[in-house]
Length: 536
Image 1 (cartoon, rainbow, N blue to C red):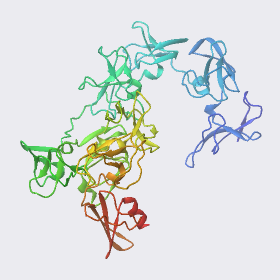
Image 2 (cartoon, rainbow, N blue to C red):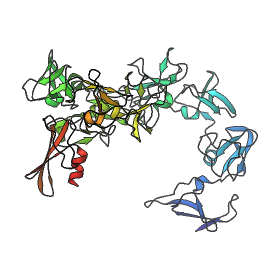
Image 3 (cartoon, rainbow, N blue to C red):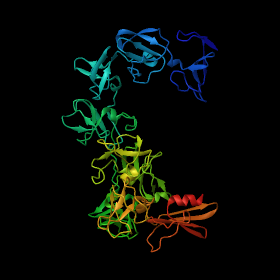
Image 4 (cartoon, rainbow, N blue to C red):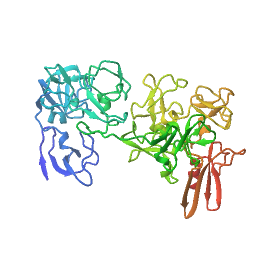
């Protein structure tokens, strides 16, 4: 066991290998794990420990290349009261040990003092010439990312360009989860007004940003494109881009296709029908054009669902999503990662933990002027509160013009829907207080509801759709429970007398109910929640 005396602490310190379960005194992070321990300093008198990388090993006064005008003095009690509390180089929060210039209010943490950035960068990714660190503070706009900087840019004097240190190695060609094509970094862009497709902020074309060669109107801020929740971290420059066929069907003749998920029969394009449901999204098919099986096997697809690509990208994962058919389920239900609804039809998966129903996977923005005057976008993965249903801690689409957020569950609601309570279509609305025709309870004017503009009927959203919006009537699950045969079937609640739920005791008010058969015993349930409570 080795003891050392360091100028910044009054007692000798033990240098050893071990664990810091309660955290380093400086960075407050633990050291090591049960597999591999790490070096540490420990004071047996004060009962505290440090990472060696977190403590100063240099003299009390140093010269730093990023602040060559004045020396920096070590402070042991953190930044002075007039400082902003962040390292001038890495912008991390300062702790006890810092190097400080009183004249310039320049502060660096121990890591930046030990590992200063290089004075010259010979082959930067961002520029064809070598770049030199400016050893003094200067206010500038980075030519690579277009954002403001206050400290020590890297400069190219012949070209009069300045760059942040972090922007020197921006990748040239990448894939992001907001676009299905590769995007490339360039500066300046071609002149014109541009909007970032991630944060929805304005892009100044005179500075660097990413754009798509195939889609002239698609651009993204440099820092938005390289966010950890947007970019997968892979540089694609120099790699061949494979052309992947994402078309889900073959055209047999005009109006006739053969879909990959129903190869046994061809599908014919026809006009709307009654009482049929789409195999992909499970929603009712009404007046719109759709495909039906030419062998009359009961397979139907909305025209838009028939065109769902086999591969796509989405803002909730940096991995590529692949389309899967409902028949792969074998009676299994999936939970959509975005909206939480159960899914029996087509679904998108990223190969790990993300499953999206086809509506959420196709949603990148929301616009309904009758409900909100502005468009909503998935700008960040910050969770929030939905104004339509008041659910909290959910992924939301946000309005960039006002404080208005909408979760995926409400953003994917049908704008118009048919329900047995009225002969007309019900329209998604907001802003009134009334009584629900289905459950006869009062509606909340702060939440969305469905209404008929002809008859004045008002209904809760949940009463109209239940929790089975993405489950096709006829879906059947076969299994066993404690050795007994179990069969669960989703059926339409379209009889004159609504069945009584065997769990909650209420009359089933939702459009789909569940018939549960356990050996010779049968029971009805109004929701998946009631089924789970019943089987506990």
